[in-house]
Length: 87
Image (tube, rainbow, N blue to C red; front, side):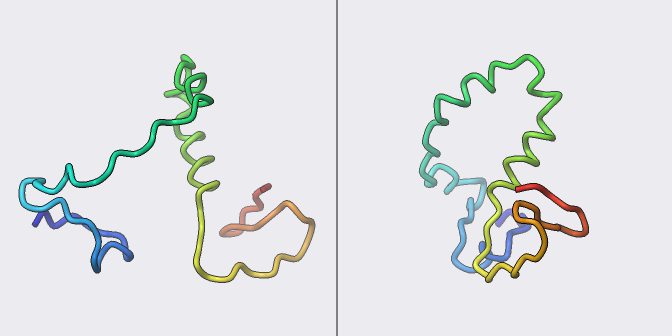
């Protein structure tokens, strides 16, 4: 209906908001954030740090259904697109 670009997993049997968003309220609400986020949300410089925080959480939330490669080298480091990242 809205011609939004969908992720690969959403293309078949995924959620569609429908014409004029009529199905938008069908999705269950997310649970509240843990209390530890209250402190973070109250920081005066959170907007300045938002890109770094977003990268931190998006990297921490990565997952795959494929097998991870066998890592060589020191434990605790992984290379992603040529950059060495500490994990």
